[in-house]
Length: 261
Image 1: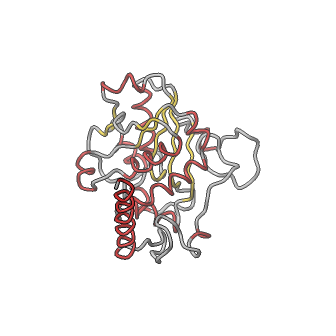
Image 2: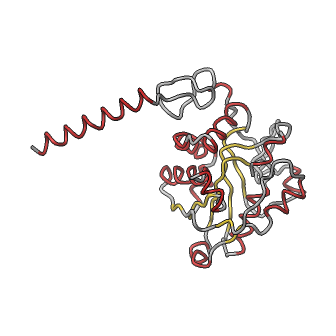
């Protein structure tokens, strides 16, 4: 009887999955063509994805267009050394990658998160391995209520599953609502997120002395992750690294991209 019950439950699960695929077939994250598995790209969109590869700036992760010695820093990193130790991103924020980010953030396509997290793991295995805990960039509670989920937390949760790391989404909170970054000048974007994040008192013992990996979907200007890093360092974090799915590279920036970090 027990074996029959297990088989029956298996048939029900299979049937439910089959019906789900018929009613909601998986579509390409880039062009929305129907494909075999959810979260994947079709054969036409895959070649359009630009993965970021070495050599890159050791601090900012910005790719160099020529060979350089290991550990080299870009001029931007030298002139404006950030409070975080290293930043890495899996892909350039153009074309298909941009569609994936927008699909996750505004299209409720949370099934993309596991695949995006795998690419993030691929580009920064050292950052992930050295992290004591993984912290997503938080949303303010009002924006979270409207969106119903935090895309950065979705990526961080999947990354923790892959790497068996501690996920700590409540270690940093956004203590005040901020304006959308779209259309703001560089100084205004910096002021917009200044002091917007804090580590709650109940979480300081968890953060103190730890290597923390901050997760977000896109790195644009860096103002948000700088503010998050400062909050973590103020709470006693030993080191802070940053890992995002996508990165806006010099020359790729568009005004609407300022809404990212």
